[in-house]
Length: 254
Image (cartoon, rainbow, N blue to C red; front, top):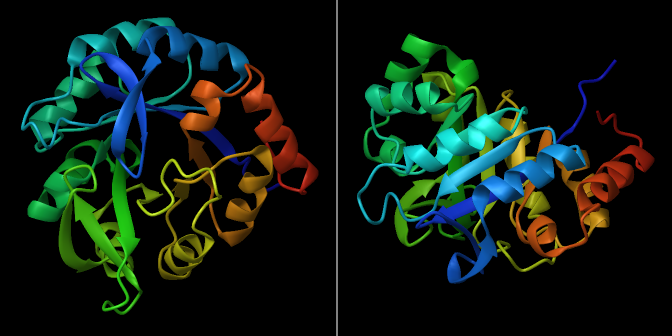
């Protein structure tokens, strides 16, 4: 039997509150992280992803107390990212209640940190969070960005996926900056190109606006699908609606 497709609400946190914007700009308040996490836990979400969206930009560590409080109230896997730079950061996050840790800006700055974390904790705890935007000058047509999508790197996004897999990431959170918050659907071309290049699980992120947007992302090669706006501001049964859409398209869900 095929592995079930995971449905993952994303909690972008800034200053202890969940926020959401469009293409990482114009953030608006979406609620209390613990309350939202409990709601998604009850609604049947398979995992939660918790991203401290200004941690890298503000050069500070993730808010460990919020994570700990969230972990005490939910019983599904919790992935935490934002400001993760070292093995020591990972250790503290895991002790605070995270099941997996996501790394982005720091891995671009010093790729060896991927090796260091995966060698100590195993690749099952490490997620590469890749914020990609279109750049026709690069071979794949996509560029890696850092600092919450604010800084271009000139690095080819698909080549970076391949390097990160070789260095030991367990899965890749593939977020399209161009699609983020637009509700126009996932960047299927980006997902297909990444799927052709790597074998680790892919989490599709950026652009979901309705349940019908999710099956095409799975068809393109995603093993999990992630969204924020749709879950935060949509009806309470949106997780169930998304799972139903994926199931009706012929893919297994939990």
